[in-house]
Image (cartoon, rainbow, N blue to C red):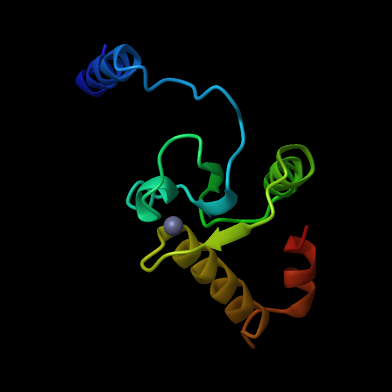
Length: 123
Ligand SMILES: [Zn+2]
C-alpha cells in the first residue's frame, strides 16, 4: 500500500472520529464546474465546508454531457440556483487542448500537405 493512500486513510479516520463525515442533508448552496487540478479545489478556493458545494470536476472544467447532467441534477433535484464555472491560470488541460487545436489548424493550412490526405485523416 502506498504511503499516500495510508496517509489518506488515516486522515479519513480522523475526520470520521471528529464527526465530520456526511452532513445529514444534501442541500448545497451552489454548484461548481471546475478543473480537476489539485491546486484549485472549489471548497478551499471559496472557503466552504463539506456539504456547501455540489462540485463537478474534470480536466479543463469541460461541460461534457456527464458534467451537464450532474449540474442538471443539482438544479432539478437539489434546488441549487447558482452554477459557477471556474477555470484557472496555468491549466495544463486547457493548454494541451489549445496545442492540439492549433496543431490541427496548422496542418489544415499547411500548403505542403495535400488536401485529400487531410480529408482521409479526419474522423
Ligand atoms: Zn486545469
